[in-house]
Structure formats: C-alpha cells, structure tokens
Amino acid sequence: MAFKPKILNRITVRQLKMRLNRPYYIRIEKELYMGEILPKATIDKAPTLTSVFNFEDNEIQDMVCNAIFVNKLHKSYPEHNYVGKSFEVVMYNSDDPAKKYKLFSIAEIAEPTYEDFHPVDNTPANVDIETGEIRENTFDDEFDGETPEEIIVPAVEPEPEAVTRAKTKKSSRGDYAR
Image (tube, rainbow, N blue to C red; front, side):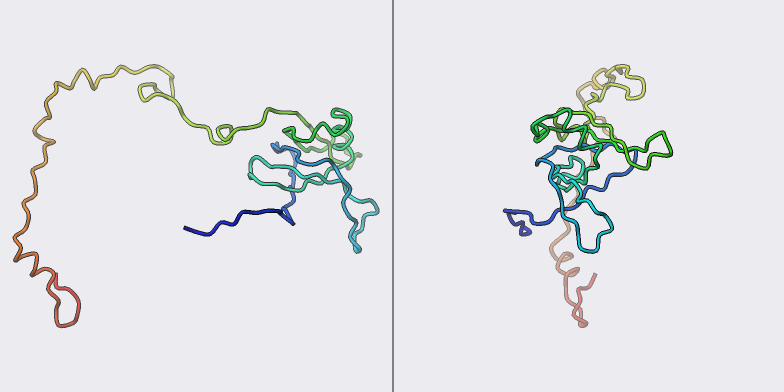
C-alpha cells in the first residue's frame, strides 16, 4: 500500500486555464480577490482571482477573472452570494472584431455528481441498445434442464507421482529439467 498523506493546507494550486468555447463546471470556493502584480509584469492592474473546485479535474484551482466575469457575478449575486454555488462557465470571443476582450456565459447549475461525469449504462440485457426494443428471452425456452453432452468436460487424470518428480528434478546446470 502506497503512502498517501493527509493534506492540511495546500500552499500552491494549479491555475484553471480556460479555452474558448469550452464549458467548465466549477464551484466557487472563495470570494473574488485582487492578486499581486509581479515586479517584471507588463500590466498595471492586479488581476482578480478566485479559488474554484473544478469538477472535471476533481481539484481546487485558481481562476483569473476578467472584468466582465466579475461584473456579471457581482450583479447577479450581491454580497458574495456566489460562494459555494456551482456554475457552467464558457469563455468566448465577441462577434465584434474591434472588441479584444473575452465574453462569458455563466449559468448556475445543480452540483454535479460522480454519475454526471461517469454515466453508467443501465440498459437491461434484453433491450436492444440500437432500437430500444425488448428482445424475447429465448434461453429459458430452449433449456430443458439437462446439460448437453458436448459441453461436459471430462475430468483430467492426475499424473503418477514418479512422473511429477522426474519433471521437477534439477539438472547438472542448476535449472529444472522439463
């Protein structure tokens, strides 16, 4: 069994790198906060960040939030009521090519379950997957209670003890003779 430590406090976390037109399923864990501007940064304003639980990766990640995302969240959830809620977030480009910033589609969702990401096929064995029609159970009709002779396997006779000992006798090279 491999050692698995209990994590008390995660100091660093991965950043959620959002790609265009792809839905992300997250739960916001903390209020939005202002990050730091690094000494060699080319920006003059600190980024807005939040800590999210990414349901697909099953881990806590930091998410950089642009001004549009922040404004939509604050307008829809005053007093930081977005904390603890789950969302589907999609980042996309504006239809106007003059606008260089990203837009967001944000929808509150019910908290996903394991089954939402790992669906189970509960189709009974007697249902045709392609058509959905129920198949006749023909096995019971054909089975008369007796096992056909062609599937009865004869028992294997054990080898005599002398043959078994000869097969496992060491040769002069140190390996076992076969």
